[in-house]
Image 1 (cartoon, rainbow, N blue to C red):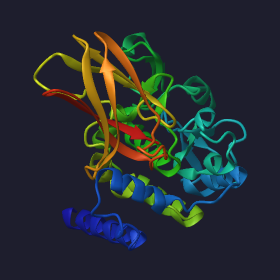
Image 2: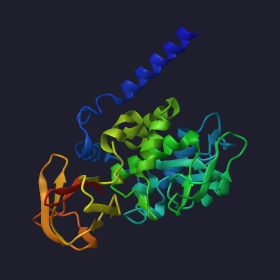
Image 3: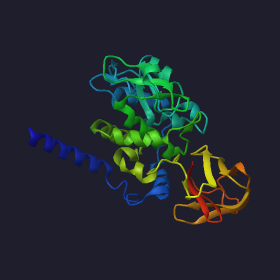
Image 4: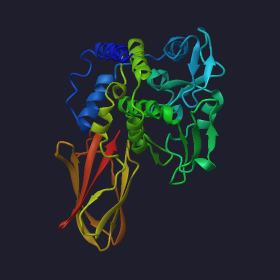
Length: 344
């Protein structure tokens, strides 16, 4: 039996490698911002804008197993036959909520199968457009399940915002779908005051891709001509977001300077830095890319208390810089603060 299982695993691995071919050759050795932007270029080849076509493929072929499809949030199995297109229950869940789209009503985003999944229509409505994040107290949350071990929750995050937490069995799928969407379209993963990235990074590790998710990625590639790189290479997630973007700043031992927050982060147009200082100080604020190149800087007088600074994603000539991860350094005398920010 062990020999048979090993043989089947080898066959699956060969099919997986064959399906990828040389797709990742140009990015396989990159990290950080370079990997993030290179993946964006690599996967920006899908042009399918037929939502009806995507739904038909989703329910009739992609997620159809002997006439059944499975809810992404509850594991509930629905018999739909081979002609169903998601018109009633189950329906189609956009993991990246349509109301979040940077380009309103964009048909390509709407039709992108990498973030479309069958869902119980009632659970889909309950999820609404709430951020996908960890619910702090499951005992006080709304629970969504059927007769499977899968349980999803809607409740409050640790910071008091309403969020929707998918079942443990689908957390990785959800995380990789959202990180794909962010990389493909540069649409932000901070919604309703919740930065989802830290939890998505954890979910990706806790629930790695299985053979079903890998096979699904291959099928989508054949349908819309791009892949989800985080399914093929889940290690890419840590290469880009090795420390969550919302991490505390790296601060000097002295406590005269501290960074309260960077918000929003990730950002698209502007982000606000809240810098705390015990005294009135002269400081230099510098922006670096991940190659260590200083792309912008300015002098600032920091007031005693909190000073808000705004960066609009431009370099020293006023030109918008490419999307990616940047380091913000605040230096006054021998004291220094450095923190990451992601520009979408």
